Length: 195
Image (cartoon, rainbow, N blue to C red; front, side, top):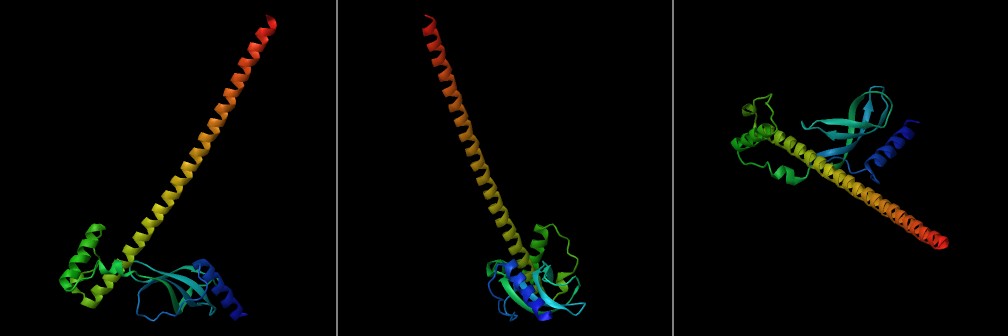
């Protein structure tokens, strides 16, 4: 029964992500931002869920295809969407001071007051911060692309609706013009009969 539930939750996860097959298990080499995860619940049941990385680089489940029980453990991760290098390359720096400078500019741009003292962090810790910034930049880019796509679609729908209204108005005007011409012709015939 549990195995059947696992297969059902996998099918639901694949449908949700529009994937045909379960991706390869995470190898830890590339930074993923979205993944299907095999999870274990507090009630000991297991199923699949969809994970996103937040701007702090932490996984969080956005969709759970199992029983109503909290996720206790992520057993395996199968990434299907990765951090694109173009977002990471922008914040690539060579020295600790350059890393600190980039992080400071990013916080200033986003009007954030840091809650930690970055100057006390190691280069590796700063690199983790830069990866998290790259993840946030990619999400922002995706949101703006979705907004543009949605706006374009809405504009196209408005144009189509306006064309339809114009065509209806033209038809109504044509029908009215025909009716007016028919009335004029009928009035002329009526006058000729009276004469």
